[in-house]
Image (cartoon, helix red, strand yellow):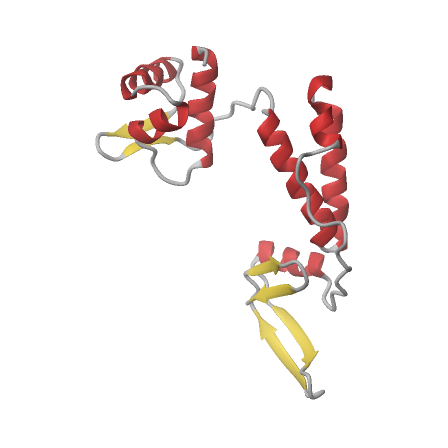
Length: 183
């Protein structure tokens, strides 16, 4: 791996992690030595990349650092396409449309040599899924989750008893044949 690629990859590793990353962990992922990671971190610090490090704890990329990714790797493209395919099949109508838009944007932005990954990925979700009839407007539920708002729900159980509840939604689980609201 070229040094420039390694420097960008270190930034990417620090971006995606929630906690500190040790030099050992970075070296293992990059298949390089710990000493090389130390030199690369020093080079990034010399370029004013806001990395904070503490011996025995690891490295963290400070907030506010803005370096757009230069390009998606073939594996990142395939991951995005597979995720978009799954959401297009299993998500609510708003998310399904967003997944189709994502695939179109990827198609327009990736180099010609990587477009086959968008058109014919190696894996994909089952195309034989029956649509789920969602009694809730899941776009509205997602908006309430993002805004931290409560929802009033009225639903019936298997015996027909109707219940009114006010819930504070925190997550929606998208399963193959059901939706689960965590509140």
